[in-house]
Length: 100
Image 1 (tube, rainbow, N blue to C red):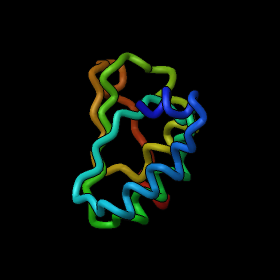
Image 2: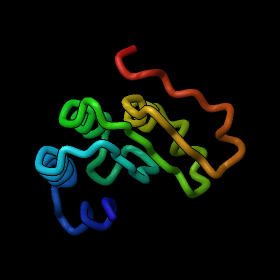
Image 3: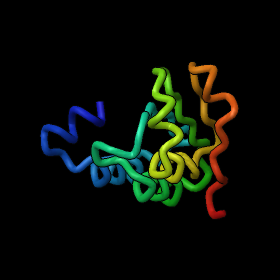
C-alpha cells in the first residue's frame, strides 16, 4: 500500500524506482487514486523510463471522481497505456497522452 508506506516515512518514488530497475517488468499494474502519498507525475514518468516497453495499467477501483479529475492526478496518469475505472461518471474523463 503506497499510501501507508508513505505515511510511515518510506520514499515511495525511490522504492518504486529500485524495484522497477531490478525487476524490469513487462506489465506495471497500479492502483493509484491521486497524486499524493509520494506518487506523482515524476514517479509515473520514471516508471515509464525504467521500463519503456512495459504495458502500464492503472486501476481505480474506488469512486474518487474529484481526485481523478484533478490536474496533478491527470498528469500522473498520462504515461499509462490503460486506465480502468469502476465509476461511471469517469467514463467521459480524458487524460492527455504522455508527452503532449
